[in-house]
Length: 434
Image 1 (cartoon, rainbow, N blue to C red):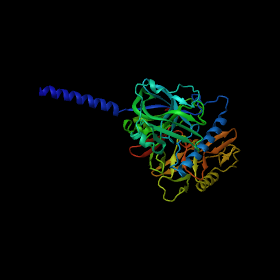
Image 2: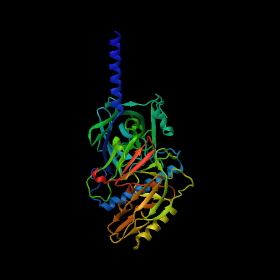
Image 3: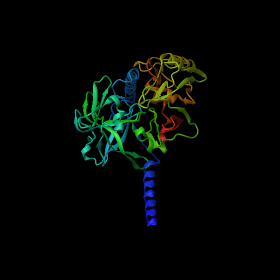
Image 4: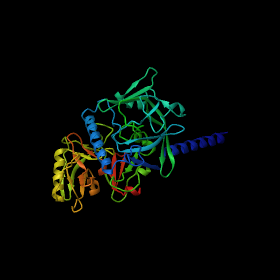
């Protein structure tokens, strides 16, 4: 009898550990990040030239920066992290059982995952069907005492039947969406094989939309540092690691940018540099410490907006240009003008401060960005972009209120976030070959 009991215990423990390991040890997976202006994007307009698309990207970036600026000035204001339409990358996921596809905004400047659900008041006609929670075997609404409801803070409220309600206002409140905080199985397709599925992921199931949302927009996949984001919810299941590799806007390749999770998200090997991720005033943002920049051998020290500020810049995949304080920007620009020579020209759109009509006969120096413990060397591909037929512009611009390391500076780098060890790593990589 004792032997039988012992055997049953061993079998049960073996099953438990095998099940736990299967759930806890996901080796890693990789999926596409679809550029806003890619032919694969529903926002792609084939009648536009590449320069018209770039002009719109620059404009979106400035508007996005203005929104972030308002957030940093009033971090307790009731508003969401990202304004629909002001983003650069999309990602395919599925929600529910059976899975329902969703093409959403993949955004490191947002936390909450949300999509529009049936029934929906104010929703517009979309290419993809709205999510019907009644058809999912694994869908649940969350109670008001659920930790994810508590994480909403002032963005959450409670219904009469103790169901958690979220309400997000965008920008100045001209657009908003609201619905139930819910949970369901989230599935992400993988380049390497079987899709990766994660039960019990919290998201906002929007049943009301007001204001101006862009057509084709179906939701947001938050990749920020707050507890409601996808990467935070997957933390224990993917080892707290994710990375991305952004294909340059100037590339003629049809390759897509990639986002990696779990073991695939690790960044290591020759050329890798790492700097601490720093907790800042807004937990969504990934703050770093910028110490200065060097144009060739000329170094310009960075003091930020506030002396002694630990996290003085944040890295963002959805902002195109890099934003710098005016005084610091002026010193960097001056060093560039001296190093490059030639005659600068003005940008008729006003998006950039330093431009040239041609760079074919100019020697553009390496610009080294000095983060704490990490010197990131940016070649001309990252620091100058052809904004028009005869216009080549410096991809960093002055800002009076915030400092952002934008995506043009990150292209052709594998950029990895290790949330367990609070480190950001990068290494030069040909992202068209990932």
